[in-house]
Image (cartoon, rainbow, N blue to C red; front, side, top):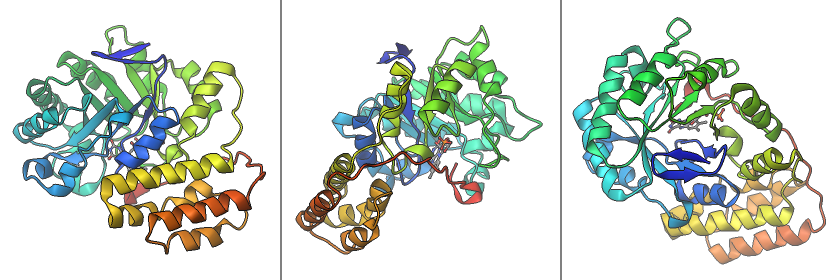
Length: 345
Ligand SMILES: Cc1cc2nc3c(=O)[nH]c(=O)nc-3n(C[C@H](O)[C@H](O)[C@H](O)COP(=O)(O)O)c2cc1C
């Protein structure tokens, strides 16, 4: 097993990455039910939390069935980040995560996100401010460094551990790389193999199949992996990886019934969390991703996205079930979208 302070996770835990506009409570529930061991909220602005911005506060919501969950915050001012950590503390997640990886210009310019990769003393002070402001375990998610000439993650890891960070997730790219090229896990492995490091080290970047998860586990020796883009529209990635790690065998692709069940579950959670109107709208972008690969599914999807009554949506989903009864779903390679400048991290 892997321990993050007082949180016990299974051996080689599979983490759902924090993803803006993606890792919300309804999506996290379906990931949890399909094998994610630890999940994070999308990043939340410390300034927004302090100003009581309603949108930010809503991001603190956690359904009990998705625990353990970490709340991720960002900010470039020690005092303000500490204040935000205190707010997070009272909302009772299992842990608090600090984002030192976001490459978006507006955030970097305020010295937050991956902006601190150019100022390690500031990064350490920001982390200390959080650790002192909360009784929750504090973890950090970051990148290898600012650019190719400043890949300082080895020093960063030691210094963060020294000020009380309980686990570190490293995305194998620099800030300047954004999403370009392939994630480089060799430095992540070096951090893991540093005898001074005793906190769990999680690797992140480009995991898109059970085979790759096993290969990277063996090659880089990390304590667990975090999965982002591959889980979007495909929460089954977690159970497929776990099964492959345990047995060496590829699970069959999710059946039509399982896909429909996840759609319904996501819809129910979305209604519960966002309410009857926003919950229906929020769900519209998900139908096609879950049902992708079924010939002619767009016709059903076009109907699903025009309906406003949950029972009518569920009735169309039941029609899908009947229409594709016995249809054998095949595995198709997961495409990792290259977000580059458009993406928050
Ligand atoms: C749509 C999207 C939103 C993201 N938002 C965040 C975020 O809020 N906080 C964060 O630390 N990383 C964020 N990331 C980065 C992911 O957590 C992860 O580090 C990155 O996608 C690489 O992992 P992957 O190759 O498994 O996708 C985001 C990524 C995507 C694709």
